[in-house]
Image (cartoon, rainbow over all chains, first blue to last red; front, side):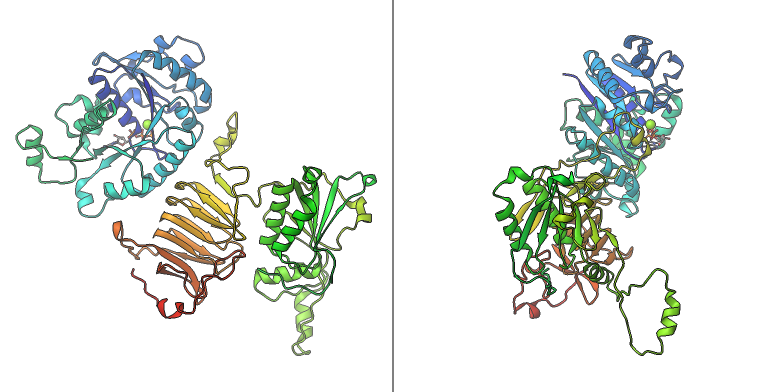
Length: 272
Length: 360
Ligand SMILES: Nc1ncnc2c1ncn2[C@@H]1O[C@H](COP(=O)(O)OP(=O)(O)OP(=O)(O)O)[C@@H](O)[C@H]1O
Ligand SMILES: [Mg+2]
């Protein structure tokens, strides 16, 4: 049974594209076949983050308009078996596609892949409506900022209105230190307002920026804490819902963290 | 909300329903309500008169003749809704008198209202009037319409009589049937949504055809879930939310608001001006509260304790301001349920117990 998951947030720049790319990698690493679809038509990014920009010949709009076959539009990631990208068109806008066309496209993709991940554009307009059209469920990405949480709340309402099942939440750019000093909202505060299940927490980390610039999603990096966060989310999503979240709540010094990483200190895990 | 009866009409039937003659080319009825009859009796009477042949009224136009009865927006809405819901009659206009409109305006504005001829110079008139100590002459209003939230048009002037049918036009004043029904809407501010090829309605919560329960003469709208940002509920009676009201969500009720969850958004109780209305929530931490015409909001410094320590609280108007107290199982003294509910919760022992304790 394959599944289409839309990654959405309402607010822009909170990490939808980063999440889509890394979950795509994480799920493919587990042996699933995955298509990541960039639905941010006109502002394509996903190809850059995946380092596949230079291989684009056709895009999503070409496929939808019948200028090429689906197979021709898909770019296979040579680093990882099972991962493919359907890039967005850069020269068109969101109105080039209708929800019905997206539904058809997703249905076709689902015949070939275990997971179809759709990177939703920011906002609540046409682009959002297109991105959720074919989805079976939604992942909401937010950062621990009030404005992002407000928008996430609103988007959850719209996801419910689109009659998708209860979405799951990823809190991105989490900074344990700031939470500890009371300068950032903690997980519990966010969950109290949004009232949906937590799928994962991703720390705010420069690895993301470095990896985005290199075109190698951080989930490829076995040594990276953020990479591990995404791999765990991938496992929780891909059939192991009981995999514990990464412990980000306590910051007991860089060295302990590194040692824990390398397996020299006991791993700390938090119950869900 | 009883209507003090202006002594105009004596006896006679509480409600008279007249059909317009066929020659007029208009298809409609006039429902006249005697001024001194309470709303609940009007309803019973309507049922007696119209209920015998309900099919006869379906999809027809009606005009409501209130005579010199006080214009109580809430009651008018209820009547309009009742006629539509129970008998399929669409009320397209309300007939009232200039005096009633005048009373209505001064009541709503809570000010003395003087009417004058448009040609008069107001200042001149005042200066001229200084000599005549205390002389506050009130002249009658000219023909005068008040917009009443799009519920229906209120027209002052003599009520149409059956002979007067030529003036009964049915084309341009059809009332949309949304005024009195709870309004669950998504305020989608995106321009792009309008440009979308198939404009999907932005209604988020299903609106049942008649989501209304009559409980002890008062209407209650239940929302069986949380309201998230961008979602709103508007209802002329009480609203009960079984869930949270999140920031960016709006609940507006003509009566009271009860939230069986956290109230974090905006709540406006007594939205037709009723300051006896109350707002209650399991966890009251609103962006803003409004009761009647009063507004209160959370100051940035007011650090309300979070977490499981919260307790249900009630907001109500006292001493001209909105006050929040822990809920002690009964309404604070002087506070009565709004709408037309009787002041049943008022007990003599309340005064002592309602000592103001705000644990914030
Ligand atoms: N966990 C993180 N730590 C540090 N930087 C991050 C993290 N997540 C995202 N970023 C950075 O935030 C920026 C926005 O991320 P991204 O493009 O994934 O967001 P988006 O939601 O897809 O944005 P848009 O709404 O524009 O599509 C990028 O520069 C990215 O590198
Ligand atoms: Mg993006």
